Image (cartoon, rainbow, N blue to C red):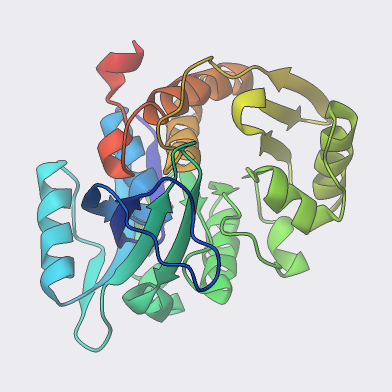
Length: 299
């Protein structure tokens, strides 16, 4: 089994359900409150683990109540915690999430220990990189650390997959180290300047990303499925039709599942279909990690 190294954020999500998302200055009486594990890195790591991948997870937490609780959750998932650092100086990351009656959300993150991620944290996992096959990264840790990890993994021959979320500008040198990039519509528009309102637009955006040096591109389009650019050829993969309850962690489930599919030597199209199926299950459930399915649910 090929090893998947996930490097990224871990947060505690605090979620409130509301009829609608508040306007500036507006106070809303919300409904149910949930507290659960989140953070794009941790969500993707849990997806890899639950879907049967051989996982190495690298993260930073605060040495506080939330950090200790998170470590306990990871152990219960059967995840190794060798490369998870408890920081005495920084707090654990927290995300404050509002979800409205249409399953749309808005999120504010206090990154805490996630933003203390440094090159030293990447160097600690060098032995795993020497034996690894796939590295999955996102953008809730410093971009300089992401770029360093991508370069180092690329030089060791790993397939580096970047989920460029949350959307932000990236150094041009990063792209040539990527086997694949998996933006959603907004992220793809920001990275390329191409406004996406049709399949043709999505193809143009994917081509623009390939020109920067990325080998493969998957632009996720929510209920419209995704546009895949594989070795210069573009094709669509339709989404599974479901009624969404909460879209939190849908993209993270997709990315974790995608890495498992690639690690199992599925074709790209098979891996994308596998990932689409996993994320379609996740959106029918509340919460981030609590919504991620297990392999037996997909088989």
